[in-house]
Image (cartoon, rainbow, N blue to C red):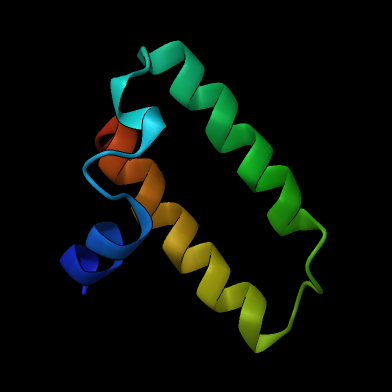
Length: 63
């Protein structure tokens, strides 16, 4: 499942792939703020949160 998400969300030529980790974190914070605007207990927010978590792990590694 993770591979499916990352291959669709993060294409090999995505501009963020070449950024330093510090800028990747800023990018991900912006996405996180957007997620906060989604209705908290909706089905969409759960799906979005899952994709966001996979994206963070893929771009930054497990922490």
